[in-house]
Image (cartoon, rainbow, N blue to C red; front, side):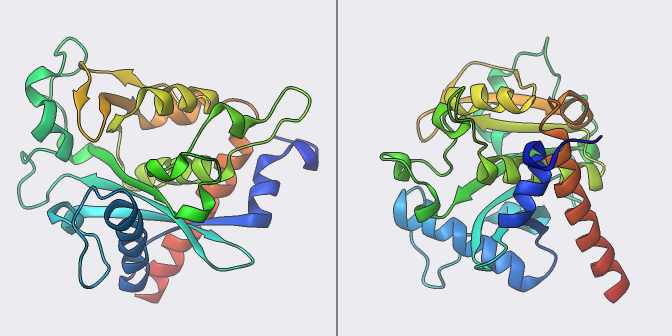
Length: 251
């Protein structure tokens, strides 16, 4: 798809940011450090760790996506996908521990899903000085109406979108068809601006504020991305696949 350069979000993104899968210990540690700075030091969701790394039992079977500044080489944010536990495919995903009993079975029957093709999005985090607006330091990632600018001065939320689209590209790479997440209402609404269709699958629960259990289809998200977002996804997906190919050839 051709777009003039000034309209091509992929071109704009590439100048400032890059997405990469955490395929080695150093990159995984970088994700854990971001999580520690946000979830432990800033928000107090988890206790501080002596090693400065925030991890849990789900990281044993998770994959991680990082966002890095092109010029600064500074890590900006991260997100993880919790995959099914290969040692026990029937083991619940994190969100199921909180709301499996309240999930609407007319939307999804958790006992019948192919768990090898399902994952949960979690641990979204952006380092503090990239969460620009007043009040954003009380959330792990910022995405707001203001990030899209105004009709006469539009702009695009590259940081949040980069992480979400990187996660979608990573899900596709790993053959994940169904994604689950617990999300705030505000963030869910903003994802629709990217063309992401989220389906709420149960009532809100209290978990660090009100969170709504939701699901999305990886392929439906990719197919439904709006016209201007598609070049950005193509750029990010190509970056991710290049990283996976390099890792495969170096093994």
